[in-house]
Image 1 (cartoon, chains in turn blue, purple):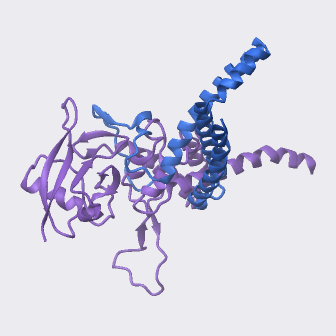
Image 2 (tube, rainbow over the protein chains, first blue to last red; image 1 turned 60 degrees about the horizontal axis):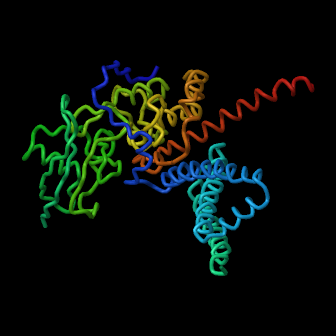
Image 3 (cartoon, rainbow over the protein chains, first blue to last red; image 1 turned 120 degrees about the vertical axis):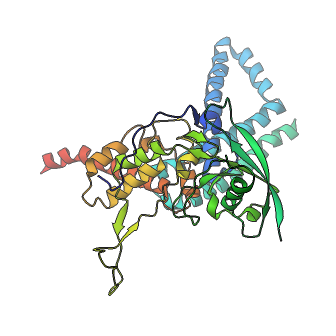
Length: 142
Length: 244
């Protein structure tokens, strides 16, 4: 056993201070890795929501070609094209950070995790800008 | 030159319905630390203010608290360098609150002790160094000062009360690196648990906040790597034997 005596268990005081899930959204004092942690959760939930939305939209195929084509025309509305940019941002954040986390959590490039985050962040911003220009040029063309 | 700074300090006593903040005006000098200011408040304005401190030089880890929303050691946090006219002081998060700025550290130490980390180690003696009479060997503390900041900043410790926590897991990895007679399989079995290394989600807040450069998140990842390596070896070992 260690040299330190084990502190006897005491009855817990009545008031705990545990951040809880909402504490994840407390941005005070948050550092780069903490921001990545929060963004990964928010984008994860967003992408999950989109997945179900996508399946619901695809189910309209069963309603026939005219219904499907009408729906596609509706999605060419500028609002949806802006939402496409938001979706792309979410996918890039979650995907690229996911690759970083996979590497780091297997004990690889741990000491370079912050540099990896910045590198993937840079790649993500470049891809997002290209994608946004592509999507929003469609808005301008309308 | 003296400069008056407003301190908004978290207050809570056992039996209170809810915590509140009290405001104090404190005269500060260029080298005044947050701990200096808090002890001044207790000495001259409110003797009932409860806080924990000891060494005043970042060795004991007892004065860890949140200052302007960020976990720090109050004894080495300069008030002027915070750059704010108002300083908000709160206790650490993710621990039971005892009083004002004091949290219960017993669960933290209990986990630390469960890991059975060697708290002291033999120093690399300088050749020819003289030891004091009666001292058979020189010892120095490991770098962790057991302040609890890593647990306070950890988002997982904030949601999983059974999480072993960054400090204990970093200690487990130190045992893996240098067992020094400790029961390594037992320590690894504690870490290899859903509430152990696998619960960490690599926010690296603990590593960033640690005032003693322990790098708990880095240790957790290295421990994971070792555990995964052990599993893979066990997975392929029988096949290798069959092939012989």
